[in-house]
Image (cartoon, rainbow, N blue to C red; front, top):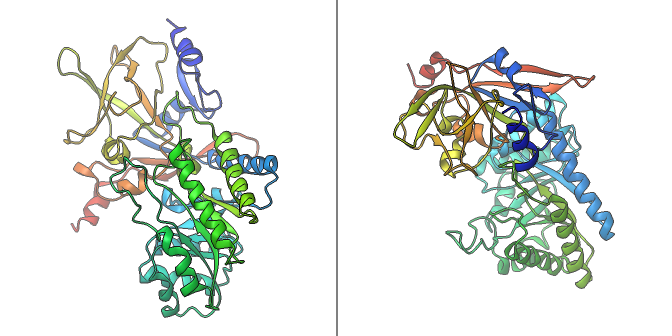
Amino acid sequence: MKNKYIDLIEQTFEFPTDEYKVVDDDLYWNEIPLMDIIKQYGTPLRLTYLPRISNQIQKAKIMFNVAMAKTNYNADYHYCYCTKSSHFSFVLEEVLKNDTHIETSSAFDINLLEALVESGALKNDRFIVCNGFKRPAYIENIVSLVASGFNNVIPVLDNKYELDKYIEAGLDRPLNLGIRIASEEEPKFEFYTSRLGIRYNDIIPYYLEKIKDNSLFSMKMLHFFINTGIKDTAYYWNELSKAVNLYCELKKICPELDSLNIGGGFPVKNSLEFNYDYEYMAEEIVAQIKAICVQNDVPEPDIFTEFGSFTVGESGAMLYSIVHQKQQNDRELWNMIDSSFMTTLPDTWAISQRYVLLAVNNWGSNYQRVHLGGLTCDSQDFYNAEAHSNAIFLPKIVDGREQFIGLFNIGAYQESLSGYGGIQHCMIPSPKHVIIDLDESGEYFTKLFAKEQSYKSMLKILGY
């Protein structure tokens, strides 16, 4: 019986030893004994393991720089982190330790950057790529950031009317610009053309009419991104080729253009069977950009990426306790967790997102197939074989023994989508949030970032 989990790990799932291992029937995550964390803090518990963020950034930097070396690519690679994936101060501080740049999405992002400047974490020589549809407050904050000494701010135009707004907001010094291409979405997507950006055929006429002879603006970047992310499909390579060819066409009439932003889209492991060749994709992207530029007799552009989920996804985990087991009919066995999937991991409900799900303890026990249910009264508050990559098997609960489970690689978007510290469905409180880091000797230590939400904080939000 004791060998069953070893066979499961080493043969069936090729258990990734740098992230997970089992010691004395308990799960270790990034060498962290999770049962020790549970004994100290209890459940439900949200974890952020900071070193994983730096590991991911360095991994991408190495991949793209190696790809550039292999192809004799004559330009630079710039790693941007898109703040919308996770806005926490400890996340941004960890990101910025790695000589990275920032991509923003809204007005308050600029206020966040100002706080990072005050703390000394952000220097004004960083690239700040400003995406999104820009309301007046966002425009004003961008102009203010430029006035404060950030010379590498690049607002990416989302529409033809955005340009004039910077002048109206009091811009009084030259500003580098980007233009986002309104890319064609995958045919199975509900809308064929992205709502974001300016369509292909309008970009060059727009540049000639509004930017070319305007001394306040300089065309720096062409921005390309598709909703489905970076995939090894004919659709992705076709869209990338179209974007690079447009870059080459624009470069011939716009000498100051020198950067191609390919957005984000590197996926996050969503199961132990996850198989994605990051190195191949980085090498192929670089090679294709290089080849098209050579064909057009155009210098290669600097490559920008805006990895968000890839940066922070693997740093996050949610730990739950199984508080009750319900046999609802002959075949459906429900394990009830001590929180809610809808409120702590909203993507499991909204887009049927899959995550790595593992037992935290009792690995040597017999296993049984189960469904997992949350505490809300909503019928959609569950996680089972339909949402997960496989049927869910967890250790049998016998003699009142405690059982804990973990969902991993949940570090992107979940806090902001669920409304961190706000009002949750059925007033389920936000769980404790613990940060894990390593000291100078490589030993882990923990810090409580947020207590479990209290009823008083909820009532205050609601006006009581």
